[in-house]
Image 1 (tube, rainbow, N blue to C red):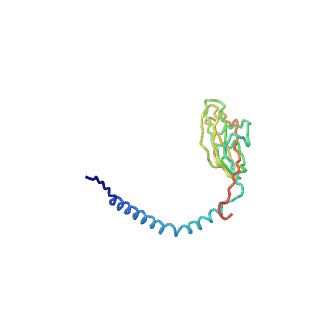
Image 2: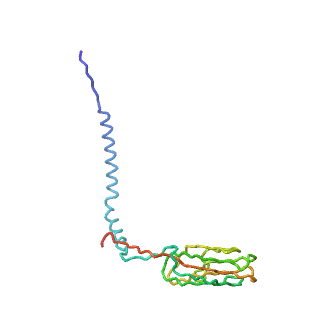
Image 3: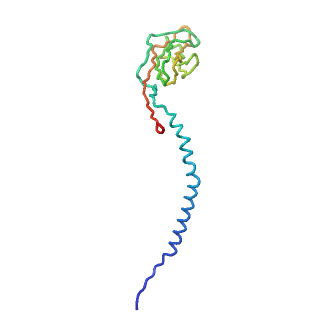
Length: 180
């Protein structure tokens, strides 16, 4: 008596052939859709890449490096906002403004705010004891950065004891990638 053993893989091969045909159909559809547009996309984006400047770009970022400071104690007894300090901005960028304010007596409160070109710009701060405030704000070259303040009681002054404008310049280089 002889032993025989037969294994048939014909059904598995047929199933795999069907899967390969399906993959071929999908790949053909992708080729028909995407490949003809590749050169058009390259051409369209090449002009955008050529527009990237290769000159250095200067950026000003907030830091604790003081650019200019005004330390004298400037005070007012005004009951409405008055300009107490003003700085002329020379370079576009994000500046860190640090200011310290207080009143002559805790019976009165102060209101202090950063303005840009005579328009309210920063956060309005108020207290009746000495406080330091820090804000990072964007200014363009030629803008006026102003500190405005008032007191709630004209008998007692409100003052800006110190104000500084800080930032660090960074140089950023960009390089053309295509068509240099």
